[in-house]
Amino acid sequence: MRIGFHIPFSGNINKLEERVRISRGNTFQFYARSLRGRKSNGEMVRLQKMNEKKLNEYRSFLTKRNIQPVILHAPYSYNLAHDVTDDVSYIQEDLMFASKMNAEFYVLHTGYFKKLHPFIALENAKQNLKKVLKSVYWEGDILIKNMSGAGTEMASTLEEWNELISFHPNIKGALDLGRLYDGGMEFHTKETADTCIKEIEEKVGWEKIKLIYINDSIRKAGDKKNKFVPLGEGVINYQGYQHILSHEVVKEKIWIVENQEVEHYDKTIEFVLSFYE
Image (cartoon, rainbow, N blue to C red; front, top):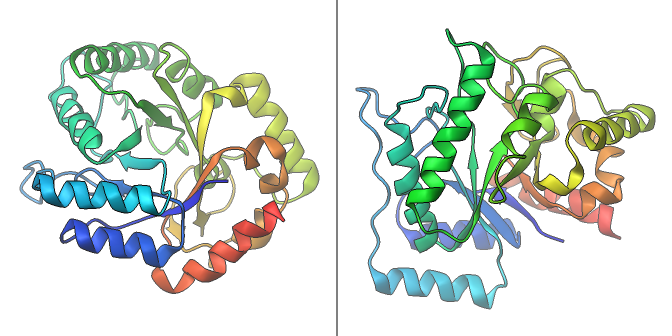
């Protein structure tokens, strides 16, 4: 059982440790650079710099509290749809940073195909991911996140997502249930949750999925746009997760709750722990 939250990494590494401690989780996620990854002038946000002493203290903190895995999330500005992109080098930098931070997983949105044919965009994304993994020594896995289908997002259907997580042994899937809902797959009732579980098995295969994201949304199912809010404040709510989180194939995955404020941590932890009683 591995349950945690997305944790802000603003300030120094000691503040990150304190936020993880307060969350009561035994895993956590943070952004490599920031949500968007770029400043208002278009300049890429730099990765945090840390000395070896602070890193060793951080690693000791993880070991003593049995916190694993650490998950590093890429900025949403990356786009691997084009055959030539500077984002490949930024991802390479992120993976070296992930290694320093003991991050076992690196979660990535592959981008938008825009004026490209979707087939070409998907092939370009796969080739770019191969370039990344050939050039960086890193023992973890890249996890591709499914998307809700806004605009020309790649991985917005189970078929596209499966293609991106099936071609390399070190690339797997991160299933965002909030985005799945916004994309049109509803799971409020036992029947719809069972259908959802079965369809994912048939079109993707649960063995390829390492991580589950729990998000709440103020959008209706099928809106294909995500507007996430803290769990319990949206249309999915705690009740909407009752059936899908009860499935054994879901319970065996790592769970990360995103978009949650500190004041919601205790209630959320109690909610997710109830599935393991």
